[in-house]
Length: 141
Image 1: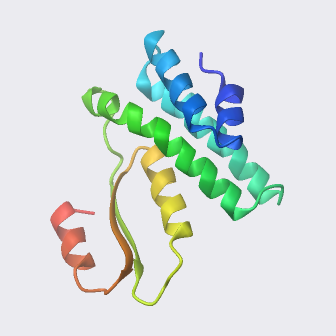
Image 2: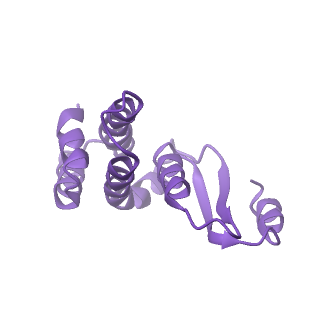
C-alpha cells in the first residue's frame, strides 16, 4: 500500500529529493511501479488539483508540484515500460504556437498526461504550425 499523504507532502513542499526517495523506498519494498505512480504520485497530484480548484493554491504551486512529480516519474518510466501489463494509453503531441510566450500550462498538461500513462511528444514553445501535423501522423497521435 502506498502512502499518498507522504507523496502529497513531498510534492507540496516541492522536495524532489524526498519524492525520489519515496519512489525508491517503495520500489525496494517490491511495490509495483504502477502502484507507486497511481497510488502515490497521481494520488498526491489529485489532492493538489482539488486544492487548486478550491483556490487554495496558485498556478505556480501546481507547476512546481508537477515538476516535482516528474522527478518521480522519471525514476518509474523504465520500469513501467518493461511492465507487460502497463502500456501507453495513447500519444499526445503538445506545443505552444508561435507568438505565445507562456508555456506553463503546456508543461503542466504534459507532466500530468505522462503521469496518467500517456506518451507525450513535446514540440516545445513558440512553434510554427508547420510540422505538428506531420509529427501527429508519424506518431499516430
